[in-house]
Length: 283
Image 1 (cartoon, rainbow, N blue to C red):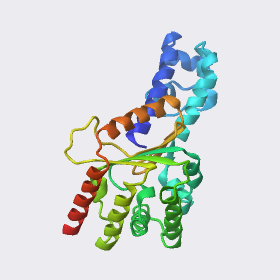
Image 2: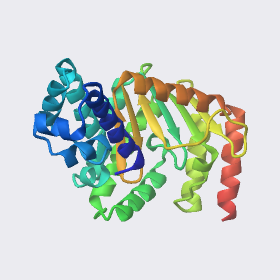
Image 3: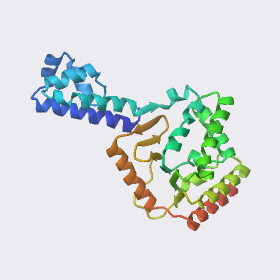
Image 4: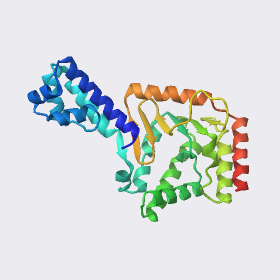
């Protein structure tokens, strides 16, 4: 479990501890009333263990705050659901992981931030296939036909960029380092840079890059995607974080605006693309 996941669980435990203390119970006292072992109460409060729903009901009833039971159960379910183990998802195949085309189509504004690689919707064919090969290797998957189908699924989604329908708009911010991930040969990377330059001129796409060493409003972090104001998705090495909680989405929107304010656009972005092209050619 990642550090952020642990922190989320810990915050839930701290809130349960607050209910216990407000009711005047010691750990042993709550244990006697609820039947939950004292050691387990301690582990729950320190974020080392998740309570089940029956334990939450007993805990809240004993503390005289039964009115909060539905809220706390809903939070527990969301905490458990917001973290999706990549390896479990990948068991269904790379194509399955890519199957979010409908989500993109339903979203009027997709906000994208990436720090270390190009987002899928900006990847040309050769780049997609090279990246899928890497994903298969990192996660010890079979690759082959499954990777090929996953790549084709991603490329079909790109039509939302190249064939605008008047409904979907995109606001994209990349760190300068994302342009320099040379995962394919020079021929493929040349095509990739050509495509990026074309995207900077599309009227329904706002495409910004934060140059290395430029003054900025906020530090670089994990990439994330905001779908309108209803879903945030952030992918890390071994987990994918998702949330539809309004206050968390609002925080990601605020962070995105700070990143966007640090980026350059238009001709300045095309200069960053050409600098990346030159660096890749030197390697």
